[in-house]
Figure 1 (cartoon, rainbow, N blue to C red):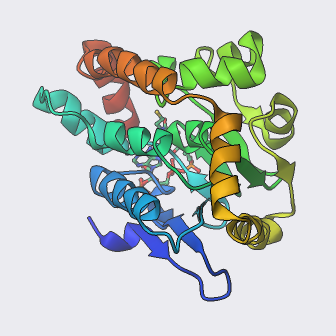
Figure 2: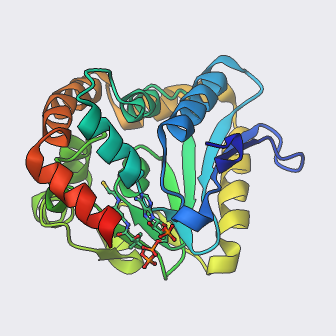
Length: 252
Ligand code: COA
């Protein structure tokens, strides 16, 4: 695994912004354990460093992320390990983020590549973006507290369609559902996302922090739902039906 699969940047022309960039386009930015570790560390760094005032998630041209790496899923499933998956620590770090999180999506946003935005405060996406969480098709269950946050944001029907039925949401549908904030042209996604993060980074930090906490609400419920989901997710990961689904993907 290469550190370059997740780039951590502090762009000089966007002072106060930490960028976490998926950079594994040859695998559609699928996320390995090593990539989760790097992102978790970056989110912790953002909490601890007063100079970081906002965090921006970005992908590559035409792809945000195809979600968890399937080979990693299969490896974990076959290992029978009882370790907490690296993804779970990243997901928790998202809930514990103290600085505003913004994201810019151009193209595919699958699995955690889609549910991540439920933790973002503002998401910009291009009209060609697609959001999809095929959890149940992979014999898995929703994660990242999406089973709590998505119905709250989108209402039951749309949350069910996305999280359980595995329906693909177009960028327009994601906008209507309130999963994202605005649509911009593909070539403008990065600039708009960074400008948004920079604009948040210039606001009075204490007021920004309190306002964000008020709008987001208490974390306890979110963390508790993550734990509850993880119990089921971990059990399903090791199930024969999930292994068959991962193997079918690997064999394509
Ligand atoms: N894990 C590991 N590798 C992945 C991946 C994933 N989640 N998603 C894509 N890749 C890899 C493919 O295996 C392929 O690798 P290869 O060139 O070495 O064979 C490469 O990325 C390109 O993917 P490909 O499937 O050829 O591109 P596509 O445009 O036809 O389809 C997707 C893209 C994302 C729709 C399809 O790859 C897919 O369904 N991926 C799985 C998504 C998923 O279910 N994620 C888990 C959610 S919980």
